Picture (cartoon, each protein chain N blue to C red):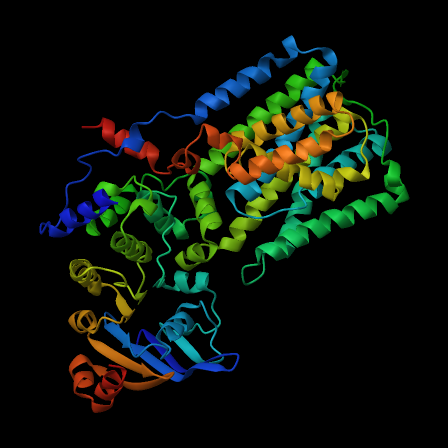
Length: 244
Length: 359
């Protein structure tokens, strides 16, 4: 049984059909890349999976549960986590507080009011910051970070709740080559406990870290398979050539 | 920018797994804390006020302290949780009416009964209205909440005006004074110190709350509600809870107000008072508790002085003043002395100090 199974997803915005029966299946501890030309519906499919959009038709199952109608909060509590396309770290809070905010999300109200987990979560906050190479900036406001660092902080926050599935929408957008390489390194260790769905324009990056790929074109799945299968697929080559 | 860029390269270039932690503490950590100083000064001034003020001014100051308590309730809701409540007077006024009825119809004026009763009334109304406005399955929009609270307050005003039992347009006059054993709290220094004591206690409780991990969740809520919902926070519950706490504090303030003034009237639940409290908080600085208190004192003080000296045009002058502050100091007067970093606060700060002291 796959971890995530989205089938027959249709999403209509007014007259525009963004998704027309798209599907995505992700197994456990699998890094799955979602690629396709601009406007092919990658981000919309991501949002339908994460709960930011409700699909017009179709079904999303996660760990054998139908979550199509779940709110984002319920999805997060079921073990799904999303990193937005536009960085949405909380700019006025320190890095430390950003991570703490993400870590304490499922603490009881009682614990929050009495700050009972403040000291127990401290080590986790620092180890996450260290893992994402941000520890020396722990007490700076998140707004002071470079764009690439904000993306890392955001990935760290998305991972804080120990999700089973992490959805990354263009994690390397606006990053330098070097920052992209580091992002790939930072993502590798999570494979032990977490699956990944990643929307990305940078095909080299995708090829380096993903096990399987799904190619969308005009709201439909054009192809899905391992990285080498997709690379050999002629229709995929065609749409990418057409675009270029 | 240059420094940040450089830092990236240093970090990235570092091939070892663990970077050195905190070799240079940032400047901000070493700056003085302004907020406790401001709080101390305000408290000292409030403690000394009745000793230097004439009697009629002590009565005025008591009213201001009660309104400051009311302002705290709005500040929690708007300044900390980002819920635009244009109907905060609903909780203030309904508690005022409630305790006035207790005194009029049941002869209950004991301070240990009426104040909890007023608090409970405010809490109940806020729970009902907040539950309705905030607890939908999907997040409610700012405009829905602000219009909903505004309508609630307006409706209560109309209801109070039209209902004979509540005294109609005239409200309920000559409320018996609040009592404790055989002692009656009438206007004057005793009443002043009573409300000041209550303000200090409520202030400290709010301070504890907004600096707790719950306060961090509230900070996330006001900055980006959608984001924290994706972390798994029950954002709507958090909002309903803080809205209810705000309602309870407004109820406490409303019951004190009713007994201090000796009467309640429909304006007290209406839109005018609801707007007034918004102005106090915006003027002083929302998102800081002391800002709400300072805003109330200054707006009320300036109105008092202006209305004495410029009998006809004072509301215009006051309006202009408020506009100027809101245009040029959107974070309120407190932002003259308080930086952004300290206003938002740091929620892991205590641990940081401990650890820095350890080695």
